[in-house]
Length: 167
Image (cartoon, rainbow, N blue to C red; front, side, top):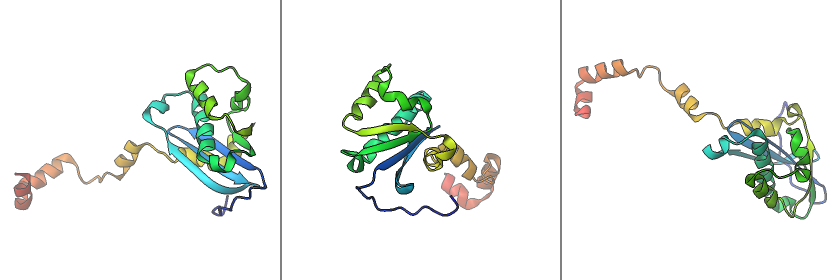
């Protein structure tokens, strides 16, 4: 992508495509038609969801993206692309956890096919899933280096106005 993507209006005569991905602390998805983006979706994972397996995070990304765009997708056939190969067979696999059973129940009523798309070809969804960086790191990077504890205390002790504020 060398130019910024231009969102197109949906055409309900053409099948929709959803590209989704989960990475680290977030999930991301793109709703598309004929390789043109219609909408973007990105969400940070809660602390409870950070401990889930990669498979469960990828499944969560798939389900949340479909639910987010349900008004476009319900009643239509569409394709979901994921970079997690085993999700391709999700609808035929044995359900192994209550979470998976819950996610499967949320997909009832949708007509879709899951296809594998390597991560290198799934760049937009991958970028959206990675935009939720570590908050503490962001704060640390933007923390002014001149505010060192000892220097600050010395300034408070020598400045009469700061002494009044400190009292």
